[in-house]
Image 1 (cartoon, helix red, strand yellow):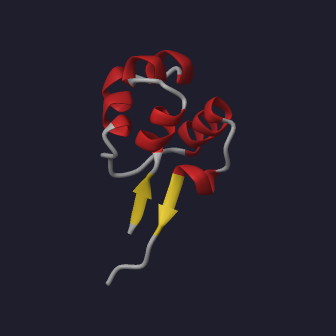
Image 2 (cartoon, rainbow, N blue to C red):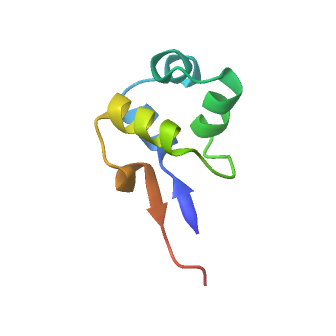
Length: 68
């Protein structure tokens, strides 16, 4: 299972979905989904934007845990 770590990153940076939308230049719907850890996938462009915004690597945005 791959888990989206954006909610934790938002907390660490004291940001909300609106901040994410504006600073990552993404739609509000996408920002809302990411902020709640939802979503079924993300583009490389979005991953790149998130890495730059939070100053992290892809491995800090997405966490892999094997299915049981």
